[in-house]
Amino acid sequence: MDIAHLLARRATNEVIVCDVNDRMRDAVSILAARRIGAMPVIRDGEVAGIFSERDVIYCLEAEGEASLDKPVGEVMTAPPITATPGTRIEDALELMTRRRIRHLPVVENGSMCGFVSIGDLVKAQVDAIASEAEAMRVYIQTA
Image (cartoon, rainbow, N blue to C red):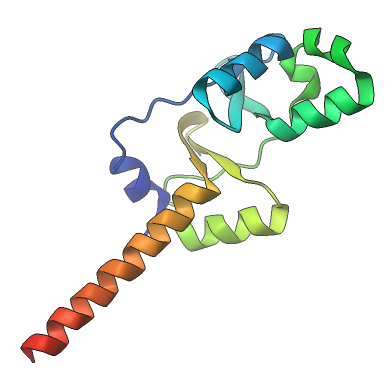
């Protein structure tokens, strides 16, 4: 299964984003209000980086509360590591594990078409395995 199948099954492909010029304080408010751990950062319509809880923690530790007024573009993780809709879920999981990241923007022809977390990918894998196991049970019972 690839990421396109995962995105197609979602009720909405709305992705919460922020702009490189947004203040970190405002981006933190979005993370908290939406109860999410990360979001893509956009510059001129393209994904420029990822802003995550980790970025907040590292910046606050290094620079203190004054860092909350910095533009997100100065504190985000960049360049972003991305996937395409055709990326196999297994490959995306391997990439995320190897690079120690938890979120991937999904980009096609330079435009972001989705955003997936490691939890999304693991759930898709578990669902696929459960479906295969059920099909095997049905096959065995009817054989």
